[in-house]
Structures are given as C-alpha cells and as structure tokens.
Image (cartoon, rainbow, N blue to C red; front, top):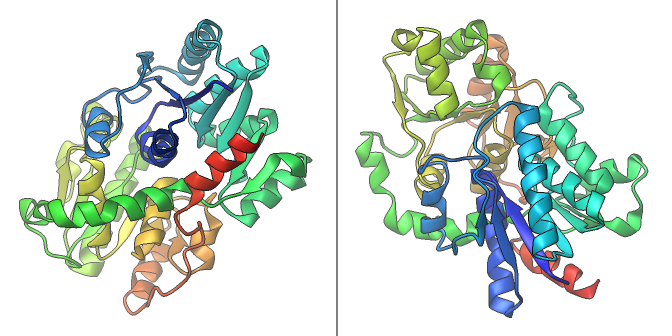
Length: 361
C-alpha cells in the first residue's frame, strides 16, 4: 500500500507527528501532504521545527476561505495528487475541512481512508466540525477511535464493527514525548510574561461562533474580566489571528481587560509549558481540553457541549458555555480539587497500534 498522511492545521501537525515518526522508525515509506489550511509561521512552520518533523512532500497552499471555498479547493488539489502519486490509502486526523475535503476526494477515487480520532460527537450540528467528523467516519475504512465511548458512537450509527478500532489518542503520545523537552528548554516563557507557576490563568478562543459576532466577543471579554476578578490572577491569552482581527474590526481593542496579556500564537512547546503551569485553563478548543486533561490541569470549557466527555467524567473539565454563574461555580469548584485519575485517552502507544493495524490489512 502507498500511504499518505494529510494535515492542514496545528492540531493535525501535533497529533500526526507520532504516526509519521513511527513510519520513519520502521522504515516504511509515507507521503506527507500539507494543505496549508493554517498559513502563518507561528500557526504552522514553527511546529515542524520544534517537533523535528520533516517538511511535507507537497504543500497545497489552500489558505483561508469560506467553508465551501476551502473544502472545495482541498478536494480539487488532493484529487490531483491522489491520482498523480498513485496513493492507495490516506490517513486524516480530526474534524477540519482538510479532513473532510481529503476524505471526499479519496472515497470517490476508491482510495482507502483511515480516520484518526474517529467517533467523536458533540451532537451539535451547528458546528462545522461535527459535520466534518460525522461524514468522514461514514466514508472511512478504518476508524481509529480514542475511547470506547467514541467507538460506541460509530457503532450506534450503523458503522460496521470490523472498521472500528479503539486505540487511544495520539495526543497522549505527543504530549508525553514533548513535555519533558518543553520543561527542559521552555520554562523561560513564564519569565517572559512575568508570571509564576500557578499564579495565572490561560485562555484560548477561536471558534467562529465565539468570535465572529461582536456581542459574543464582548461577552468573552467580560468573562476574561470575571476570571481576573474572581481569581485575583492575570490572564494570558494567546490570541488566534482570527480573534485579533475581529477585535480590530469591531473596534473592541480598548475593551480588553487590563489584567489580560494578549500574546501572539506560541510554539507547541511553549504552549505546553503555559498549560502545565496555569492555575486554570479556559478554552473552546477540543484539543486543549485533551491536553489539559493529560497534564492534569483544571479546564473550564466555554462551550455548551463537548465531544470529549471523558475529560468531564474523570473530573478534569467542566462545561459552562458563557454562563457567568456556571463559570464562577467552576472556578470555585477547582480551588480545592485534586486531579488524580487515569488518563482516558490511552497510555501513549496509539501511534504504534495504528501502524500495526494498517500493516496487517
């Protein structure tokens, strides 16, 4: 089989790196294709450098665009590569437009699809990511599910059990492999922003539903102020380019609380350090929910649902949406909480399992 991994965003780079390195360690050929769905240096290139990841064999330079424009461009460009490179099987990870566009192009050509992190469900069809992951699961030939719960979602939707594999999540592999490096080389980032371990809170927000509407974005700024007041600690906010652009577009830059430090997106290792040493983590990101759980840092999710319910089940995560009373209660809850649990996403051997399953097919 001629295999290819297709990536397009920061989380995909991070979560696919352990799989790529397994192929390299085993001496198995693998094409690496990057759609460039994320296209700034800090959101992209820096991760290849820090993770010592080889550069892609192909860069498609898709860039930003509407859902339809971006997905369509990915489909068209991936289709040409699948044909010209005679690719038999692709691996895609997660729920981005890169995943959906690549999977649609592949299935129409009879190319087999492995979906890494399959079976996740928020049951919120207003989220583009939910549509992407559901469709991809139903056209994939290998569903690599992170948990039994995720696998059950796929089975409940009528997907054959012969296609479903519970392997854990490669984010555990990546976090375990890279945090020790980060701790040894990147702790200076705390000094850079004049904060001490446990004496600041971390927030990330980038989903369109949370930043594209001025009223909603204003609520987010109000929540940041609430966090500062309730915890008496500053907030570090690595701000996604999308969010920064919206602040400027809506003329809301002066509404940013004085206790919040807005920083440009940081590298993966720096971000691991910021996560591990934060008092509390506030996010609308699924990947950050996972990383917080693995690093045993309390997470408060600024959404009304999550496709990572296991993080809630083990006590690492509370779902509050933008409800201020729920956020206050979550902050108070985590003041004395002890996060002692078995990580629900595997033991760090997910990439090895995926590789062995593919080699046996």
